[in-house]
Amino acid sequence: MKKILLTIAVISALLSVSCQKFDSVKDLTFDVSAESTTVKAGDPVNFKITGGDANQISFYSGDVGNDYEYRNKNRIDQIKKVFLSFQTHNVGVDQDVEPDIFISSDFNGTYDYENVEKATWRPLSSLFVWGPKGPWQTMWTATGTADLTSYLEDGKPFYIAHRVKSASMPTGTISRNWRARSHSLIAETIGGNYLNLADYKGMAWKLVDRYLTPEEVPLQSTTVASTSILLLGYYNSASPRYRLNAEVWGVSKKFESGEISLGSEGSVSLKEYVDPPVDSYTHYYPNPGVYKVVFLASNATISSSKQVIKELEITVTN
Image (cartoon, rainbow, N blue to C red; front, side, top):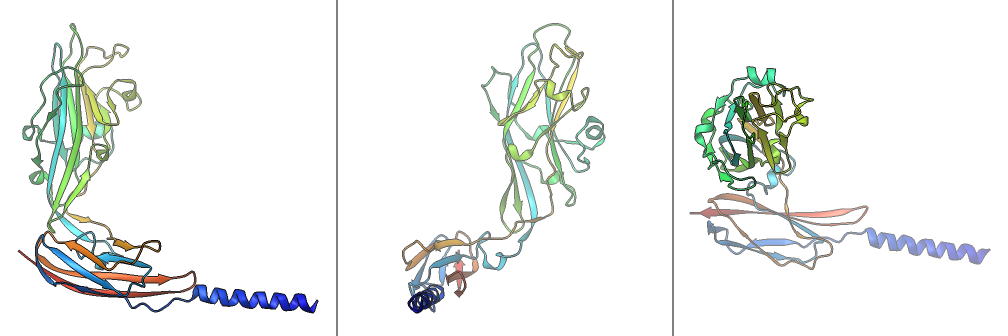
């Protein structure tokens, strides 16, 4: 019995020593220096990393999106300009549809015709190139990029809407399809940043028909597909409105103007636990300015950690 107790005591002691060794974190001798703290825009900034004993190394350049100051808070900027582009395709046989595009700052976000109709929609159609009639799945036309800034209202949110209208067609072949795809809504901020507000899917189009209830719209061929929005200038043959005049809208989600949050900013990982030691790193600054560079090195176990922060100031000239 004494031998068993002695064995348990020895094992416990060994485990204790082992855990202590596992949990202990050695001091970091990590350091960073720059080959030059003043460079021209576009030239390399070469950093020398010494110590070689950090398990993890993170880098903050000071650029927007990679700034240590904003690691735990959102960067706030102001929208300066907004640009929109997309592609269109128009299938017309005996009669063309009438496609238009609008912007509204007072639509209330209720996607039915009553609320769409009473909103103020400012026409944008003259800003874009529209595709001619053509065979199905061909002749997509790029609209060009339009500056929508003058249509924004004092920081109010805004909506974009496509609309297709057509007159009644008692006879003839009905094939009045109009489609749009590849939307790109871009904002330029006062801080000189370019933000992708939405691509085609990000526009989050919702269909609204003048003559159909929201429940009836999906029964038509008008659709918001995975790659394009399809608006028809007619109703199908099973509809009581077959061959009558049509009006259908595709309305986007709400977009903010004015002040905008760019979110918090992350680091660039230079080394993780499984990576070999790092002794250098090179970064390029495209724009002039004074940048606060931060290298964050750490060693950690389950129960303890040690961290070293090294800061440098880099001046970038023209």
